[in-house]
Image (tube, rainbow, N blue to C red):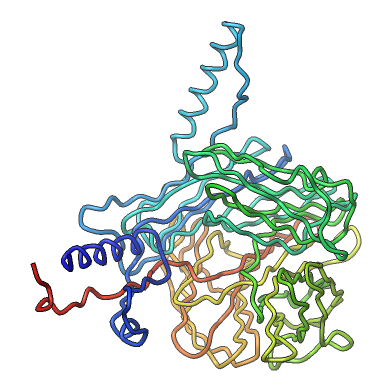
Length: 515
């Protein structure tokens, strides 16, 4: 029945708006007609997960959450909600035969569930961030959902400061959407490193994940990285060095799920050098951009991996303040299939901010790769590092939360054509007025901006970047929190927030519908 087909198309449109699918094609419709009739609608539901912040009792963590103002999402009667709640602690599956112990375990489970039902953060209105603080190693992983007008563009961040110990530093991470496939170039199982992969399951049912490791010689042997069960609404942290007997300095970790979905992020710590989170790199592509290398970077290391069956040859270029240039002696990089390649770019920026761009040497041979940078500020006992993974463009809009009165730097890189962007500083979490600035980024350059905090700022604020015109823009935010002469910092990238979804318009000639 043709009327049934029409109903299915209408249902598919509603599903796309709910789940955030990037596109939806009606069967048999011409591509040009689909494009012309498509429209952009706000998503009605968003999910985020945040890993457990730190294992250090000295850790001080700030959670922040924010939804930018804009075109409201949700349908008629949709509930407006954006809450992050503690993930449940995974319980032992072994049956307890001792009645007293069983009763205590049951009571503990009830308390854990009651605690998990109480939100740590709850956004009340678009345009104003909310904050919560937690101290010590007991701070939990978080899972959450936003619906209605609070869903489009919902963002969250956790920033942790550890001021003592061999791995002291600032750890920052933007909470991520759950998925089924993640790449982490820059991992390590070296003796000096303690790298933990955090897997957080936001759903009620269990998820099953696999972790693969690839070094400079190819796959690293591991029999315990397969079939890792992550219970529903729980988080699991795996020390990478326990997955293999091999000690490898530079690795690419690949996380996939057999069933369910997880949020995955890598916590790295190098004794004496610092600590930070490494978020997943952008999906494999022939051209990649890593925006926002600090002007005072003392060391920059590129880690890249070719996941396909073909080797990759790429041009390595720095988009500086005024132009694009190739670093001397490292203008190209050969990446063997299935192997991790590294390049020490030293102090490539030489006192100016920059972004790294990788493009195929031969335009007609764009082998997909993944990549990330490890960036160091300071030297010796005063050094600290952070990561910049390859990231997608800002697109229509992207936000990052937890900006302080001092210490935030926004980097904007235009790899192709000139681009015009709008940057909004939100109201503060405790007070302050939002402000808007517009910037033009020249093609092939990086612009570093010190955001002007909101007038009357109290608490923290969010930054929202929107592409107004021109070519694509890649962005990141560095947050510096110096401590005892150490330039402790962290960098978060700003990919498109996925706040809207493209769906076809429900156009059909009703005269052709027959009973």
